[in-house]
Length: 290
Image (cartoon, rainbow, N blue to C red; front, side):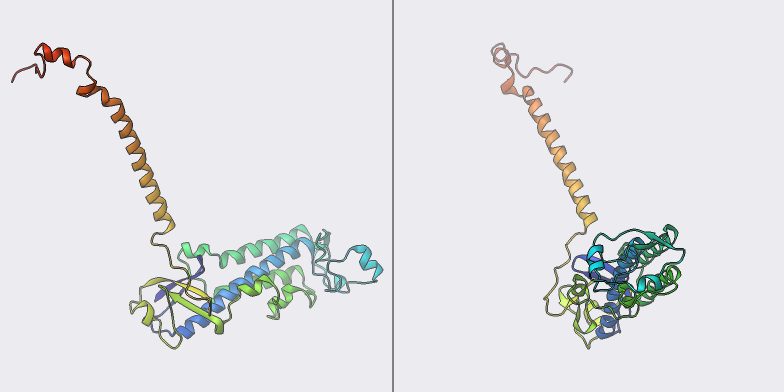
């Protein structure tokens, strides 16, 4: 099995395993699904952490309004009583006015936060360093444990306008957000290796070779963005080693220069008695047996 270390720009994302006979189309479909799935997990974790702190999302027509404005407009959150967290609520106002401030208890909030931490670890970029793969199954398991935690804390469910609910149902609307720029749809995805695009309709071996034990770095990006930046000749660890080596050499040279400066008094031209010895015929006299 050939291993592809998938990068987006200069950032490592995950390790993907396939065979050299697999078509580029299949690889792109799988890789883009994993990449977008990881983004979904990250979005969900951010929302669930907010849910643990400030409760459910207010209806769109109430978001960003002060209590006085809500009272003047006679608006009411009908979902506040329907979607109460298990174990009661803990008042914690949302300063930006996006959530209703009726947060779960500390115990239930901890369930949500701990699950988010576990889910993020499952799809973490650190798995690249550990040489561990992330698959669509890994993403599915991360989504499942997040869904389970939300169901435990909110057994009555979440309001239909809640982003978490929409993410779980794949009805999220990312238009106009930064998150929409990060998503790479399969039909708009391209994969690059060694400065060349892996063309659709051809097997992976046409680009990485026929050796099944190969491990290469492949860069994922949207079509039409041109060739991504090449990988540096040396990696970060090698660069640190080289810098340490040259620093050591530099210090050694400084030490030698200093010793050379101190040793100038041993030179003939610096000997104040050289002329006197020359007149007395005492130059180049050697003591000891010949």
